[in-house]
Amino acid sequence: MYMSKKNIAIVMGGYSSEAQISLKSGRTVFENLDRTIYAPYAIEVLQEGWNCVLENGSKIPVNKADFTLKMDEKTIVFDAVFNTIHGTPGENGLFQAYLELLNIPQTASDFYQAALTFNKRDCISALKPYGIKTATNYYLNQGDFIDEKAIIDRVGLPCFVKANKAGSSFGISKVYTAEEMPAAIQKSFDEDNEIIIESFLKGTEVSVGVVILNGKTTALPVTEIVSENDFFDYDAKYEGKSQEITPARISDAQTKAVQKQAETVFNVLKLKGITRAEFIFHDGEPHFLEVNTTPGLTPASIIPQQAKVAGISLQELFGAMITNVLQH
Image 1 (cartoon, helix red, strand yellow):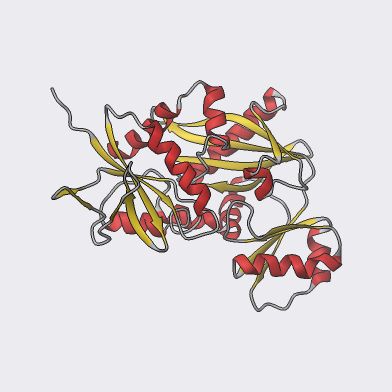
Image 2 (image 1 turned 45 degrees about the vertical axis):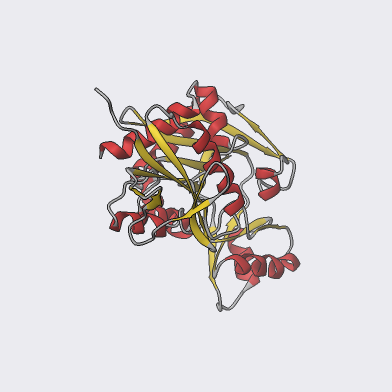
């Protein structure tokens, strides 16, 4: 019996500093979807417009009223959306809410979960009752009185100053002295109106992908991150200034412990699709840093590296994500 192919919109880009990386992630998905089952469409969601980009480079505008395309006098309706937007609007829940109103399934976490995890402060608060350890932190909002002594008394030095709602390590600084604090705070406020300041956790940094495979929440092999820079910043992530070692050089017990924590984060927060949680082993125990609900999927990204070590092809991995949303 002939089965018609499922129309899949791969959305990429976004409105943040991460748009260029997202376009690469989207292209990786576009190239690795099984053409015998899916008809993929590359949809760029950018501030200058939403367009389907064809193989020849020409663009067809997306109808935002119902998220359809007009091609050759036909209307293309999508069975599902593969969401690879990093940052806003695809990682903070806005795009998910829009698709939910249109009743179009999408592969990333739903709008509330996306908004919650994109807000580092709220995410930590939601996980603490479940025994997830984190750094000591201090919160600042734009306009607050900045008491540098109180900050340092609480979190110590060195510490990290981060934009609360930003990805790819934009708006983040490692601060060693009180004198460096004002510039670091300003850098974070340039990205967001909320800041989280965290104590420095000395230890091995690891990253754990989690995906639902055959109906079961499954942690992928653990990646150890060794940054040539002072921390895992933008250059370390995307300009090759870090070593990513998969599987991580940690004990079996530590591997199991951090995979279990990553699965707990996924289940407690009711996430879906594929996520990547970051931890630091501090005093031998995994401490949670953050979770990404639309992690990078470029060939250089951590998730494809972990899938390879697990023996899962990208076609299989991306196919599983689409299957999961089409079944619900």
